[in-house]
Length: 293
Image (cartoon, rainbow, N blue to C red; front, top):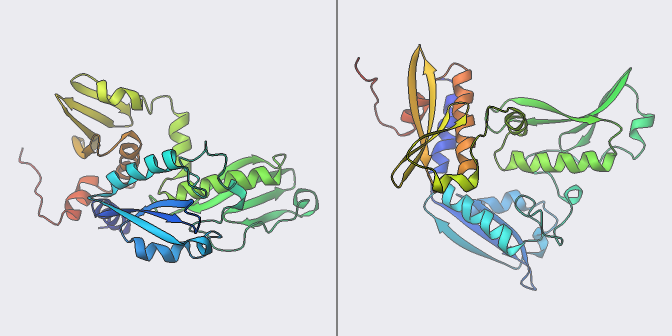
């Protein structure tokens, strides 16, 4: 079994663990940050370099039976309680810190290395600004790019951010948004590709609860199977010339965004020649036999 299969097993096993939603408050009882983790006390070490960590005066913890319920509660808490330092789900909060002031999560090095006039004065080459942002200068072109490790495939990837006519501060803001996606376990390139594909993402969030009985296609092999009050996410794919169906989760415990993330992880294994069902059954630690013809 390949390393990618083991990574997928570990990822899915983590999703089924008891998960905690934590909140950090300062001395004035202002909400600083909301997050979720299966190991909330160990998570503190990941936040130790954040500029707001020294202001934390107290913390609260709320437990959930699995990752999906905790993730949903975390998103609702960020939208309704408007913490100062969250970025995802918190775009409407005017009091939050701007993207360019937030430190990177999962990236090493110092932020904002490049000078303001880097586009004009630097020679050809890849010039790092920190946090995955690079200025790519070639003899006839100058552009911004973002390099990161995909949280799905664990491979290094590169994403173009546009020509260097884009101001440095705007490129840093884009890179901060992408770093946050990577920290949330989302592959930015996969998200962009799916948005640009008209055959993908055919369903909408407001449709899920009202769809009639039947199999409803979201594209790329992801289906919502509706039978009465039951709504199950399935991934349908071909293996050795035979059609296979893989259950991903049940709505509302797995919402549309989470189903697409699980589908992308399974589809990535399939494209690499691995069987997603083998990874799933191995993760469950029980023997599995192929059905007899």
